[in-house]
Image (cartoon, rainbow, N blue to C red):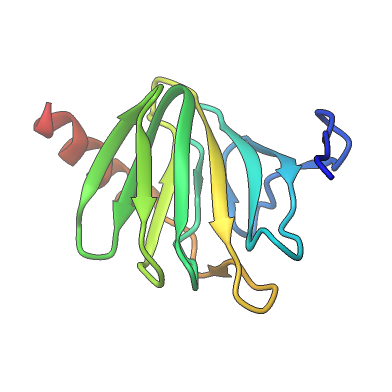
Length: 141
């Protein structure tokens, strides 16, 4: 049977300062279940806000819904995705994502699970790492 999940019924939370820098909010859109091995969440980043470094055992797809999202990988790749763009992150790639320094952003995170686990959080992205990524992103344009 088809199910309607109304906005806000699964709750949300402010980003924990142990794994996010700056103002971040997460609203759960839907959870994984017996026939869907991924969950969805709306993640809003204020300017300069970002996640910590992390990996996903089965990958993640981000659909940018508002503003811009910057993402970086441990290999030094930096990309900026705008509204309507999609970021595809393969399994176990160490990465982070967040907003630009002068623009907020929001994405829908579609995150697959293996045995109920969808993320491994690592250390926070330092201001130095973030600023270096911003410079690299601006030089690409």
